[in-house]
Length: 209
Image (cartoon, rainbow, N blue to C red):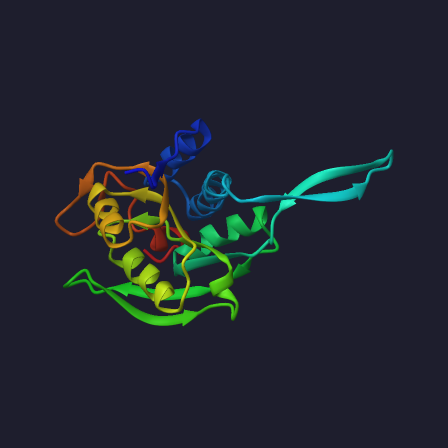
């Protein structure tokens, strides 16, 4: 799958390894989500176009590079995606932010939409949808479908951990988007959780379990 990028950077793998431990504290887990998101953002923005800009240094005039257009938008899937968005905003503080609220029906495992708020010019922007986990793929597919219905086409998806089943479903549903993954895990269990995974990311970020 040419549109799937699995991170190989040692820092990403090291930090995800710490996150997996059940003994990692809520604060440390939260900090690591932001840090890994920053590192994934570095990979996901590698292809952004650049433009020349003339400036004056303390020594002389010169031509430097800047991101062309600067029209970027981060869209976290609530609630766990918020912590990833915070990390990416530290890298791209000028980016706008939208929010998509989805929860998983525990019986059917299907996503249910309850909130969507996007910048008015979202269709003109490069969109980075973020969610720590790509398990069944249902939430990611639903979020991206929702964006496309609003005329948005330049979409990238970033996650910390993914299951092969979710990656396959997302690629089949949206073959035109790029997917950036911190770690591709073994499988889903009978309850729809990633194995070995790191538990419920939202609960671990916010200390709710």
